[in-house]
Amino acid sequence: MIRLRAVMVKELRQIRRDPFSLGMLIVLPAFMLVLYGFALNFDVRHVRLAVQDRDQSARSRELVAAFTNSTYFDLRAIAPPGTDLLSLTERRVARAVLVIPEGYARTLAEGRGAPVQFLLDGADSTTASTVLGYARSLAGEVNLALVSDAAAVSGSPAVMPLRLEPRVLFNPELESTQFLVPGLIGFLLMVTAVLSTALSVVREKERGTMEQLRMAPLRTAELIVGKTLPYLAISLVATVMILVAARILFGVEIRGSHLHLLVAVLLYLFGALAFGLFISTLADTQAMAFQVGLITSMLPAMLLSGFIFQIRIMPEPLQLITYLVPARYFLVILRGIILKGEGLFTYWPQVAALATYGVAVIALSSARLARREA
Image (cartoon, rainbow, N blue to C red):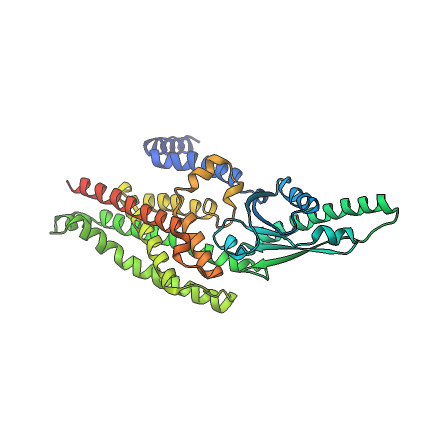
């Protein structure tokens, strides 16, 4: 019993002397609890909706109000006749478009079925299925109101007058792999790129060879480039392998430009490798570098990037944090190129954000390395 107590006291003292381990034991579980508790939410609300009302009647306005007065849809755009509706979803102005044809009210008054088109971005198959269910439910409520009105006037039951005709864009079969594979690419590249550079530099410190590198006639920029280029090449090879496997196994086809995809991947990897280098300037052991790299790359890339969980349903403080996660911007570009066939120019804000992130992180890494050398 005495020896057991001695071992326990020794372990407690060792933990107290290691603030990082203490933080990992206390702070990390609490952090993950808060993050999972707020970020894991499968409800879909406030879907961006565009409306093209070609009828401009009281009945058409009632239908629009049924959608926009719910908590499911937020009206973001009114599309006049002749508008390219496909571009509204490509530019992410709206996730869904409600198209009410001319003569809608007249058709209802005649007791015939009035078709209404509902265009839906199916790149995110899980969300698209939920949104489609919401649209059908709202259309059913409108139908019940129309039937009740008709029965009150004529005294006889009427057929369902409104026919919602959904059309799913970009992923008509609503296959989840079409949505998950691009997100998986961003997740894996972030984790592997960060950890590879972080562990590589810290390994040099542990073996004592980092001091030899610093004594060599090398500039800081040359050291950074020399350490990151091999991992950049390896990451590009891994990207190609993932895309080939996705094409063969899941039928995920790249609809956009391969050159634009390459540029986007290079920008993303540039920031990820720079961040791994920055972690290596903070950590002195491989275990610490691995833990810090895993926490700061894996969790944000999975939970705060839109990979699995929708950003718009998170609390506002978490939504603000997602602006610091490069995977958020990369996934928008990646899904746009692979699933929608768009180019980089469509997503220039996301491209600019990735470039800014990479430059900022490489500047911080260079400054810390230069200071350590001094």
